[in-house]
Image (cartoon, rainbow, N blue to C red; front, side, top):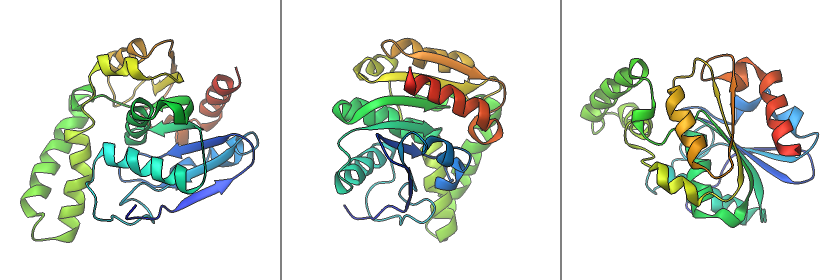
Length: 226
């Protein structure tokens, strides 16, 4: 692999990997790491080109990030893990669970989406405008190129069909905020197409893990320990 992930590690027991959202890093889960590490061996990873993990030379796509995750697990001799992904991290976890079903114990998808159509238009339109502008200047500015890549993930990825979700074998919880930037019907669509998936809504916006950590953590632990 062309990169080494920066990660935070804490706890003992079954492995649990936390995957942050677009433009963020492992510190997003500061309200989760200490709590979950009482029960699990927690790894909170900075995705390729995020936080302290280098960009590398490979494609900047959700599927590449899923392959990066496989490389991380192999490197750290993690045979199987619970995956909790938020936003783009949820999309990475979702794709990973389809591609490498034997490596996932339980799956938590928080604020994930199958395509840009799953995002409310009031949120998505400014993203698309920003992406077009950043792309226009990406060959003239490093910051524009980086912004173009990040926004491109939210415009062009992950492009998963609902039917593909039937390939997920792990016991899954789909969780989102009641005022999430992901459309409620889209979140329900994801849950409906993953065999046996549980669906949970918590009062709040897209960032329920950071804004409502006690309620979020309780829901996740109840799911994992049920």
